[in-house]
Length: 328
Image (cartoon, rainbow, N blue to C red; front, side, top):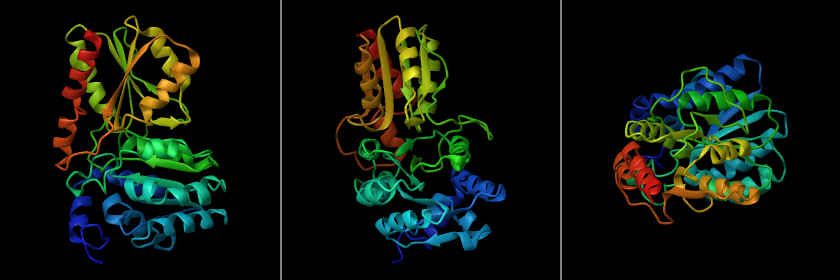
């Protein structure tokens, strides 16, 4: 099969060349090998769309091309993990988290195998490829699977930090990333800790809790609202499971308006917003929460940047939603 989703297609070779953020996946894995960690990588015929071609070139004996066989890739990775080698497997998040959900649950999570699954081009970032390739349900689906960690780094540097932090973590892990064109938020060498949020400020009027690509947009929105005299903070909740409950409660305590807002490139049902709502309900905090994202619908088909603007997931969009919420 030779199509736009094939390892050997010229389309994906060209795409990878334009997406420097994808380099961080291979950079992180190459660094682990150099540090003496016994890791391997594999992809479902997509090494040029996720940047693993660089790792494959550097360590061909540590790379497996599974072909367009995502469920098989997950099961084989679970088997490899039983030998003491830590597998990193990557494909489109829609095919990994949704198509291979049964294998993730039974072969990896239930069997407690420390496989690292990288779901890339998540959310609506595949644009024209449409509903079959969009992944706006992966957080909600995988968050409910026991003994499976889930993180959503906001840029390439944070992705590489997640890879480094996972080196000594003996748990299954799903890493949710974009398409490699994510705006830069952090410098290379940034730190990441599972279960800890990164607080960019707590707002008296509102604190926005975001993950993935929406972190940069939320920071833009907070800056724009700050120029209007609003006190708006931002929390990067890259670690969705385990979740930083203390950071959520701190934001609730800091709010004088009694309002919080979550932003995610995901269905508002079951995702980050639901996780935050659970904490607020568990602790009995009397605070209003606005969950902003995809409002329980299938995304339109259009270029990603147009979709982000349409669903108000870019900086101006988030700012407008936040302002309307604060004015209620």
